[in-house]
Length: 368
Image 1: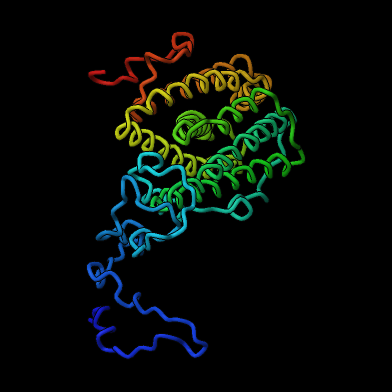
Image 2 (image 1 turned 90 degrees about the vertical axis):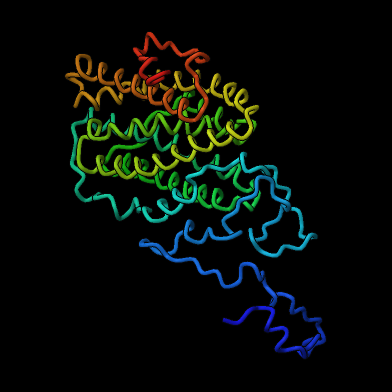
């Protein structure tokens, strides 16, 4: 194997200028001697981001020296331009699972055009078609906030945390596809886009206007996307045909990644900077009220109840009880995520836990 510095020794007479007179600098031939020759080994899946995290290339600094777009691990000049990043601590953006989630995301991308069997869509009774179109109208509205929010913050993150930035790129694409698939479903069966209400927009505004990225992550991933994930998990019960079931299965796998990132990011952030816990709590205090308002949105709740009942005839005796059970499961899962993230809301939340029928001891778990 040729060591990089040997090249300079072997060719001591390399020219100082090119034919046009431009000065030439051959210092790059020296490379990083300590890293030169280290070869990552591909895993069974191919060459992953985890596989190339070898030597210093796998070391993510707690506080990077530079605020440039230079590649982490490169020999960076001290005078590289400052990009003005404001998220310059690892705890601002990091999650221990972010590289694994990125690899999963790129491996499981799907197409709302090709991977949904649109030609198999069946004509539905008018009440079910209206309910599905209303649900898809609301979902197409909600999903894009989970694309806009990472885009708002991603370019402000230090480039040393490139794995987190790369993962958020996949989330942006995921959410664009979700908006696409629900918009297509609203139109594909002869229905259309129905009502949009102020309650939905209030929640979305709460998320997008969060003062810090960690607050925004808590509102988006722990609260907002967590609720949507639990909704998609009920896709078998909600979907009137195999087309909708396929849509919910595909979107669910994406949402699970986003929630997993957000949960572990919050945990990492709190463990490394306990002072951020209070600002997260303040954001969730406000966000929970907005989520309750969304849950009480008559369009969302009644369309879900009708779908769960399988039609208008049994909406009162079957649909609303099932819709209330879903609501309970959503809030229970949210509080459990907060526990896993190191942000216990059980003593802080103003949610009517008794009214919702939530078992606090079950959330706390053994020894809680």
